[in-house]
Amino acid sequence: MIGPLVIVLDASVVAAWYVSQPASQRAREAVPDSNAVYAAPDFVLADVAAALHASGAYGVQEVLGVLERLQADLVLEPISGKMLKAALAWMYHYGLPVRALLPLALAREAGAPLLTCDRLTVERLRDRGASELLKDVVLLA
Amino acid sequence: MDYDAIYRAFIRLPADQQTRLIFELSNRLGVFLHREVSGEVRRRIQERGEAIDQRGGPLIGAHLAELGAPRRPAGETEQP
Image (cartoon, rainbow over all chains, first blue to last red; front, top):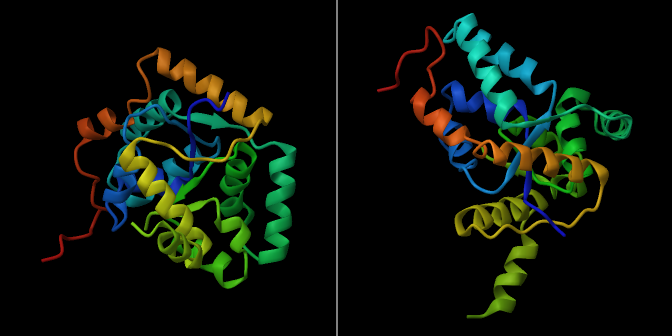
């Protein structure tokens, strides 16, 4: 059985839902309520909280409300040793931050596409010849 | 329809644009295309997704509609 579609999100997509940026509309349109299951590494909550705080547009209670909603609607996955090993290998090979690569490690582990608005990471992967990794990436920005 | 020509055009796209196109088509048509993986992580995510479905499904869209438009960062003015 294949089961429902799994879509992995990173913090850049979730932050774009809440803080206005050029990719916000696409980020919202990309997650219609449907049979898909939306998953993300569990540390995404901390990254989203940081992004909302940095925007200056959300108070602490509002950020708490957002995080509670995300906990209810997303499948938040812990980083396994296997994912960490893959992300570390890519970090050393491609010279990118491991935090930016962990969502991709989760996506590959789950056989799922990764939605991201992180153009910088995608362009660096492309420039550094990581075409194989980019097969799993959907850049919304 | 020249399906071979479409396929040849598709495989000339960069890898990430191939994935983007598949995702866009899937999302708009409601027919999802994805690789079949029988891994533990995928199974666990799907099971937890089913638990979310039993509570009424992921209501991200409804949640975002309640919130209204994304908020502009503090100090940023609207572009004319």
